[in-house]
Length: 492
Ligand SMILES: O=C(O)CCC(=O)C(=O)O
Ligand SMILES: [Fe+2]
Image 1 (cartoon, rainbow, N blue to C red):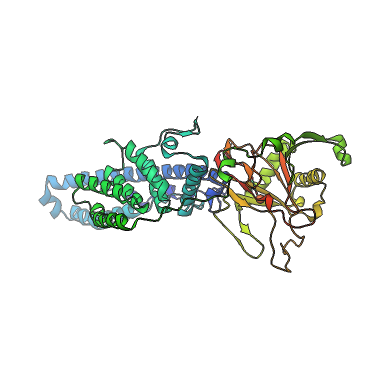
Image 2 (image 1 turned 90 degrees about the vertical axis):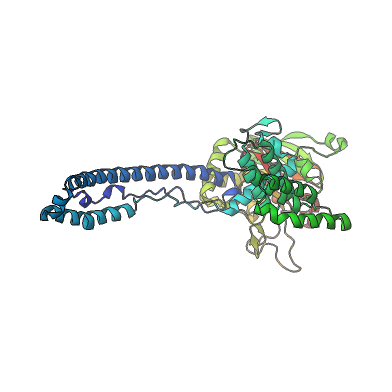
């Protein structure tokens, strides 16, 4: 007799997980803070997968027990099948088993265990993958990093990670190809091929060579592309991808010989920008000799009690650094207030604000009313600049992740004739900028002024100040400035 175990409805796998803290909105790649959420997401996916596996194991165990009971019954029948089949009671049991019990088993087998892979957090998207890969290519450009060194886990002579595997280099190369960044794709695919051994899991040499051939061809390197295609065909004469690219490559080689090709367009940056990012200050020795450090102690009553440590960085236009302007405690408070408000930074004016590759960071706007620390920073900024904060915008907190940057730009706006610059704010143009560094950055992340040859590296607690406009209110184009990509660390 088969016990009616199936009647015990399987309530124990009806459960639901929910992590309220995991509800970040997309665009993870734009800051370290958002990327950090992804580690939490992965952790919860693992927990959820564990649960799913466990429930499946329980389901299998249960089915196994049922199977054994049914088999015992069957064995009894087979022992004397004629008798079993002709006995009205056992005949009933047989038919009943097949109709009822086996149906239950079938239903049970199809039953969901009630656990799904949890993704109540917004999963990162292809756009995030692209963002990270573009950030990586940008870092390679600006900091002159080659794929082989990066793959070995080194960053400018610092060991920061493990050696990458052939499949990981292949992944990066492929994503760069998808981003049409063939120059970097070629280098990563070459590295993948160099690292390839017969033990490399998950990736065949043929796949790498095909990918490399394609990226090379997109760079106009048809000859080498063809060499790889031919190597593929030697290993796999019927490889479809190689077969279909061979002929076009041969044609392109002939075309290139006859007509030549336009040179590839290199990534262009404002003059001096990459070298300033790498730390090559370009002020003349004569200009540097005029710069001073001093205490500012007599402009306001507050400064008498608490003088400010000022370092001149440039005299015309004036750029200064104030040291030790904000305490670690205040920084922690500001960051904590900003964290839940962070979203992808925009560019443009009030009329048209958009997400742009020229600025990859996250930011949040804080109002004085939100917290005493915001008010106190506003007050301090007033003491520092001698400018009234009544005409200032809210405090903006920004966070850049690895590869995050802000290409050279002006902080002032240039309105159409007769129009207000920032109508939504209605306070005229941005006279000056004050920027507090709320973190150190392990490598990179400088604020640079390409026209002036000035580069300032973030130092936690210091603040920089400059005027965007001349004293007569016209714009000062020498204030072009940008935030270099963060190479290692998180910039606040
Ligand atoms: O992060 C920096 O170093 C510069 C930021 C900046 O220029 C801006 O937010 O306007
Ligand atoms: Fe700026």
